[in-house]
Length: 193
Ligand code: B4P
View 1 (cartoon, rainbow, N blue to C red):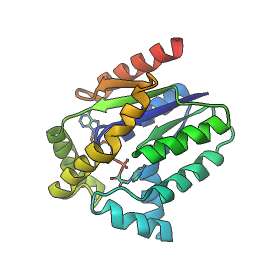
View 2 (cartoon, rainbow, N blue to C red; view 1 turned 45 degrees about the vertical axis):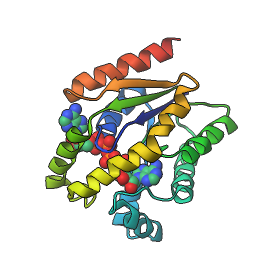
View 3 (cartoon, rainbow, N blue to C red; view 1 turned 180 degrees about the horizontal axis):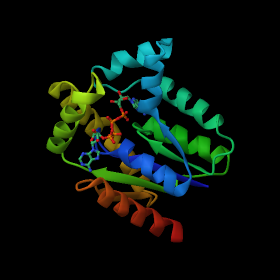
């Protein structure tokens, strides 16, 4: 089983690259952002709770996010591996994921950290807002808050995995295909070990 974490600030291209990686490595894609957005579209209680946090650029509370992630993993017993996109975003989420995988004698193979500057992210997300209708992309202050939340709460997750030599930095600037090739290079190096 290959379990990969696609990591990086909001708008760094995690979702964009995950779609391509899933196809190449035959993995199940789990995007907590997409899961929350589908709950919001269905107007479920969880969706309404998540929306209040997402609209401000804050993280949805860990207990909600971890429970949703567990259910999604359990729904795919046939998976040959997972690509986690936008999860874990806090140390408690990382610890919960490590335990869930260890319970089935699995582990994270690699954490791929897309490096993109704050200014590039603001530009990308304001641009996406023109077509996405996403309220968390439409306002520069909210985008900058999302970046601050990333620095404070999410960046430590990369250090958590760096301690066990699983974090790999990847330049997130350039064309989508060039970044994909860099990611594949990192993954194939890890898989060859
Ligand atoms: P997410 O849905 O995870 O999304 P994201 O951070 O906005 O984007 P991503 O990095 O996937 O960027 P994308 O490829 O789309 O999170 C949204 C919110 O959900 C969070 O703020 C939080 O509130 C909540 N949430 C989600 N997971 C959570 C968790 N685990 N715990 C708590 N809360 C959670 O790319 C962005 C844009 O850039 C696109 O328009 C794309 O076309 C463009 N782009 C991509 N690659 C490019 C490139 N190489 N060059 C130029 N543009 C590029």
